[in-house]
Length: 530
Image (cartoon, rainbow, N blue to C red; front, side, top):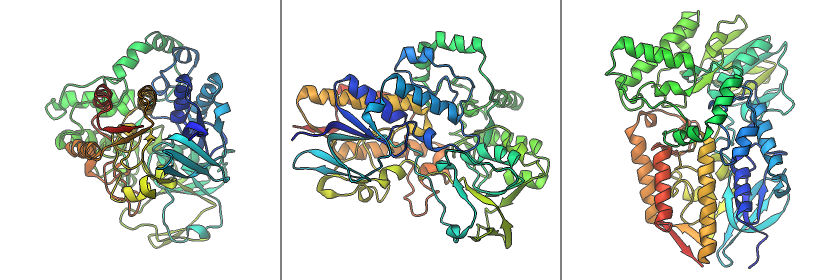
């Protein structure tokens, strides 16, 4: 049966845009459906104050086009949301992508038709498109988590969520502001909100580790050197677990003399950013080594925050790195400001939201506006918001009622011709997302091209291959300390969500090697049929 398109792609972020570009290059017809009014994905929606990438801009960028690498100029070490969004729009314009993107079109349902071996994709405007393949590119952190706090709908002032920020911005001048949450988006936004607001009150359930970014403008000579050596840097990055060109440490923290260990931590602290966790080779493998790193950061908190009581509340109690490490610009120093109050709700959660503010710890806090910095329903939230139905009309949410199961984080048993870019069970959020996205898109594109050459129309993982991959993902996670605390990696921030460590922690090189072996084995683990 004829279809409207070879593929429907859901989402016009970096994954969806590159997917469209690659399919076009192979002669496939494709349509991208995007809920927003523009491209950019997470960088389209997340416009809160201070939003910026925690991977250095020269590495958080596409590498499929050498001309694009050379022509685009990043202005800061860590690019801001507006700059990354400009980059996304530049890519869309440069490769003429918009003509195949339908904006303001939210996909609500997609059903696999077993008789015709095609997908019927329904959008909110009543549109129905048919396609041989559906490729999801909604992102891992794109479904905002709104907390279930009694009375939230009663508050009379404006409520803002960092994951769905007003596009025309928010002016907090002269306002009393309450921020709920102290994760990454809060750590980035709190310093800027505090500098503007009359008074800011931060409600903290869990203290988090954060490393200073030491952000600044990029030196012209540095940019010139990077552009001259981009191929080498990209090759090195692909050999590193996170897909980022960090120096790989060979020494154990606990086996290193204390003076030398402290010097190395300080060196990484002074450089700033996520590379702090690469100070030694066993920070996520050895409890004592991890404690040494955590103690170093805790000492920094006590050094920066003047009030010892506040410093103690801001000091994390879990291990460093089990939650995603944050990167900040002046976060802890913000709590030295006279217009900032910290409320510890670890042992006494917020009781309710009132019409005028927040009632917590037996006290009423009055606010002009509230900011929910409460993160996302990570990895699976956006996928499950779409009513995806595979063989027999079985919903994906039923398949995943005990946690997500995939083959390579790309495909799901019972859902033929469905591909997920950076789905659960892939390295995704534990890596530099852009190289991980490109690797997935390239795999999918070559797979579709190979199917066409073979004359087959349907591909689906086999049960045994999926179970073996799920088992491998779980066993690798159990080796590290990352699976030992309640984090969004395991869905702990969403009430009722199954506790499963969702991303693949084995590293990008090992994952790439596995995918290459699958292709070399003529797509071993998949069933292909006419």
